[in-house]
Amino acid sequence: MITREDLEKKEFEYLSPLAAKSAESRGRVMEEEKSQVRTEYQRDRDRIIHSKSFRRLMHKTQVFLAPEGDHFRTRLTHTIEVSQIARTIARGLALNEDLTEAIALGHDLGHTPFGHSGETILNNIHPGGFQHNVQSLRVVEVLEGSKGKAGMNLTAEVKDGIVNHTGPTKPFTLEGQIVRFSDRIAYINHDIDDALRSGVIKMEDLPEDCLAVLGNTHRQRIDTLVMDVIVNSDGQPVIVMSDSCQKHMDKLRAYMFKNVYHNEKVKRHEDLHRVEIIINSLYDYYLDHPDQLPKERQELIAEHGIAEIVKDHVAGMTDRYALNLYNEIFIPKGWK
Image: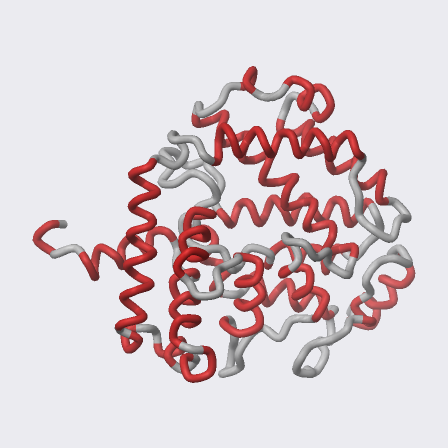
């Protein structure tokens, strides 16, 4: 039998001195008996995969609202692609692949229904605003739990990587920094793929200089960016990308914001208006009817306040659940 101690020993033998070692983790808020066969980061990864919030990602929008077709990315497929890219980089740098995977799988657990459109609306209506990375941390610290315990009780390294996968603060582990890069590498390239498939853009519309540097295909661009991060970060105390690749990836991102993310074909005005109505209506409804919240949410109101719990509930919904719930509450049955 390969024990946890065996795995921990192998980390010190094979991983870079710069890698986070599970035996040296800063630990959990609540101490737990250690697993016989899994490291601390492996346990965190497994807890995330088995969580309800992770399962719900399969029915949450990535970019396209109500896409026609089976092959468009969801928040779950995005998460899996980020995880694959991040693991490849971590492996190439001899960093901790288990920690990297746990952070990648948990980084978007707090995303709203209807993608970033839902996030923007909640940010506008909720006191104190809304950020999906902060909500992801809240999910693993408070909202997901088992056996009457609040939260997943994850290690400090995983929680830091989740909350800092975006925003001004870099994760304190190199593994967390890998996920920051992998998130952007994944979404820029798979969103290009989805936009091309939908006909929103054409291949000849993409900036020629970006394609010349990064590659003409989805596979080539990801390979170029992944290898660039590995080569430029090898042996370094920070994860970095070359100036050339960073410049052209940022240019592609700017192109996508201008031509895809705000494109009428991707997010029609009537769909955006509908999303705004749904989220506003559900948020206001539960503020006025806290007794209609799930029991486990009602139990948190005294500690966190009604507005915070309503935000949690709405943010946790899938697209189809939010839509069906809105129809059930607000649409007269004879009109359906």
